[in-house]
Image (cartoon, rainbow, N blue to C red; front, side):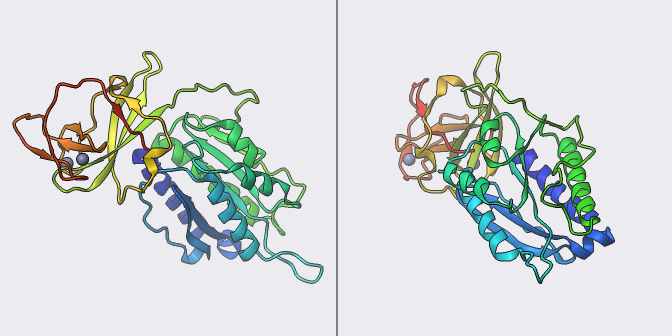
Amino acid sequence: MAGEALEAVIAGVNTLVTRLKTNPLALDVAYLSVITFAKEARQLVPLTEVSSFELPKLSVRTGTSLGAVLRALMQSIQRDVVKTTPTEKGDYRPLVFLLTDGQPTDEWESAAKELKKIRPKIANIYAIGCGLDVDVNVLRAVSDIVLMMKDLSPDSFHKLFIWLSASVQSVSAKPGGLGLDDLPMLPNIPYEVLEFPSQAATRDPNPRQVFLHARCAGTKRPYLMRFARDPLDGLYYAVASHPLEIIEAGDSNLLPPINSANLRGCPSCPYCLNPTAALCPCGSLTCSSPNTQDTIVCPSCNSTLVFGGRTNFDVKRSQG
Ligand SMILES: [Zn+2]
Ligand SMILES: [Zn+2]
């Protein structure tokens, strides 16, 4: 997740936390944990009382390791959630909000099967697809509760998180939490924000977005260029670029390359604002000034780039 959508999710989680911190019932019983998944899954915040929960910095990373995050989730629940026994009253069954904007980039099917096999269910999982890159069938394999966000505007994320906060608060107010047979769907779903996708959702086989890695010629720091597909002409138009902390090894070997003839425009470098990019024979993209007199040294392999007349070339794609 990158850009405006990531900012909106961070704002949304903060809204949720603020609401729970001011609700005495939730303050009493609710615990929160955050697990992120990009190239790998990380439990950023272990299960923590609402009163002391702080959201750490979330950064843009590439990849969508759904299998890894499902395994991390199962481990955390089995380790951290107290089970009810004949002699001891355990924790409420967790609510899990799984937000994803991409297609899985790891082996996820076995983890989804394992999760669905566990009886009684270890959690009520809301699988929430954010944007058109998400495959509804993947979400269905993970959970019975599948929702899709209609758009990714800050306002829609705000409404989503208000609804999620209400869901947590209503479970907190219920003695014993949600029973095993309770309908997990909670009321007042914001219809302008979410929809239940129909069983036979058809999919456009073309990716909605294309991501390319580049490095700044000046600072050598990596960034991610984002292009979105215009369904009318099928071409990918420059949207934005996002600073990256690192380029993860092997990231661009998983997707077929894209030919530059399908790309329109170029997002400027987020560090030095250079408006164009050049492709080095080593395969790396570097930001470049539009002035062809300037010498560019490839930040990846240090060779000097010469402007050639090639107009169509293949570029390695990165995961979103
Ligand atoms: Zn630059
Ligand atoms: Zn190079």
